[in-house]
Image 1 (cartoon, rainbow, N blue to C red):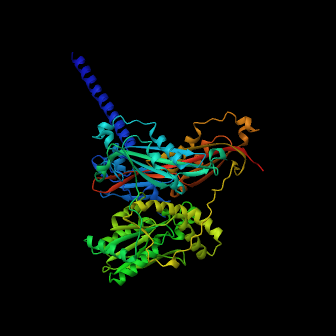
Image 2: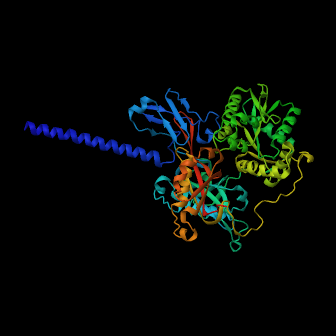
Image 3: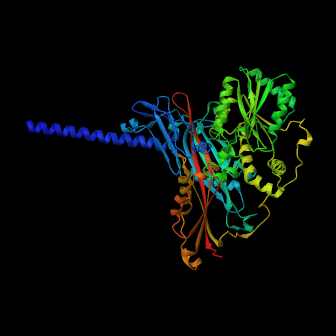
Length: 630
């Protein structure tokens, strides 16, 4: 009996241990699922390990990584409790905790409040899709296909349980990344019809891709061989409190447009400043003057300064251009050639220093700032002084209203008002070409090529930020006439009808073209997103006729792959990691700006700090053809 009792006791102990192991396994599995499947939890959230809070500080996001000249080295920080945090960016993403935490063996579980987005109080689901139009250059068709691709493979049977009013309370924030040169032809009402329920908020941003379809067919309405590609990011959730009144079940689409542009005199602008001062309890009022290249924002800021001085209001203008990276700093970047060629893009500014300097000056009421020395083509330190007796601070620059890119978005809390100076793209283009041709002493055609490659993408990104302004200004009515360059229409390349098969460089003939997209939302790993895009382009296709079309079979094959990612991530794509995806033929790989960087959520962490969730999207364009050895 004693042996039997002892044996039973052993079984009870073994059973308890087995149950503990199963419970632990289930807990770990559930924790893993929680971390990997919900939009509100990933890198950047505080982690709870053995009751110790470890903040993964969101200071260095992937987008910001390119902006730090120390980016080739490991970045180490400590949180308030002194725990070491290690981040290393490169061909992969690694995050590690200190030895004590690692030895604990406890799976970290993220903890934060609900994920939010502009116009949304709570984000429940996020779906991403990709669409293209090969013929007719119809951007609406590409956007519709992208939205369908995002939602047509998903169902949300739990919506009634998650939203008190079910579909009637549903809000969808649809972000479309597309070549903004086609945005004027985008019919958002047709895109809205893709979504049968809820209130839709549209957000447009520069990106997507425009590459060759390989053939232009007159019967298909082609004016060229452009293939237009759009990425769609669809967030589903509930309305923010301020927008709940008009989020009814009748649907409808809302485009983020901001206030209507108006023409003002400088006297009116001074009056607006006076009103802002009356509403503010602070000694200083901060005004951001934003606009695309050539819009006249610097002139507006300086004229406003003069008018305020005449009124006896002591003011100062702080130029954002003083925060360009020095050329010697660009030389240290992962891809110096790219950074020099794209100087003026938001990721070629020391945005972290700008945010820190302005925040410190706002708090203390004083500070010193750099300006940009055009003669040296580099910043000039300590060029602008803000003294405590200054009453109005005007900050002017391109990216002061860039709300969905870190760390630029942190500027919004510093300004009492944001003014956006309007301008038509073609007018701005002519102004910038003439201005730069004179400054660079280059012929107009050569200057135009450089402007189209660099200033125009920057211009479109800035123009999309007009929706975030408190006021949208046309050039004031008393702006001097001679300061407005005469507008001469410029012929847009690629709009004259061209029909037939496109001649691809290095190919006797292009045979097949495939496109795909891929994303990474945890480590913002550009190589991972690019690899997924390439797989998406080729893994659903087969070319059984390859030997009929090529005399020597695969040995005659040339594959040209173009991967589009946001510019600041180009240097992070590892070409060698993509080559094994194409086991046959000769491979030519190129990288260009495009794809998308979508804001997936904004969370308030314990302690009041904020973290942002991002999704990096890459687009791949794969051309398979016959190699031309000549």
